[in-house]
Image (cartoon, rainbow, N blue to C red):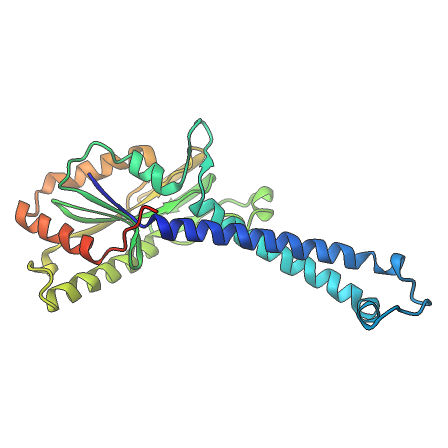
Length: 268
């Protein structure tokens, strides 16, 4: 299997997450300092300069505003870190990013398959090969997830209240896959209209699956509208799709070559 990864983009977003987190912590520290203003500068004492006078007048607004802004920034930063930074996963000694876990669990397919990781526009995780295209909606959260048809729910949990901004959030992965399918179809149609892709893109099957990479996930499935699997079972989903034998070797090669040409690939 060939891998096309935009590592520079992954690293950029990881760095962005760390910077936002540090900025959030700095803002929280400013808010903490502002809360001590009445002790350090009693209201009945004259201020040494205009800045201190301003802080004395508005210390409560500064303190509570910094608390809200710092908390939000820190959690947004944590969201990026969880999605793009290497981390140690439960029940494993390996430190890896979500894209590396996905790649590792798809090893074994031959070079007729190409895995695109954050390198294609609007399709972070995409596998192309002899049976067309498979799109993966990847989630790294843990805990209970209930899926019934196209309805996705997480049971109420006190712990999740404190990590609401830190976690990626479940959302509706099935809808996400459908939206990504449409964007990929448009990308293929553009290639066909520009004569960069010499196959009938209307015949290219585009399927998808929701993949949970955290071993601590507990899935309760009731006839989901799309395949939903822990990452360890992803290869089974791909192998099931390969039984169709949709493309000739030349068409499969044309498809993967086109996606490779439009991908942004960087290993630095």
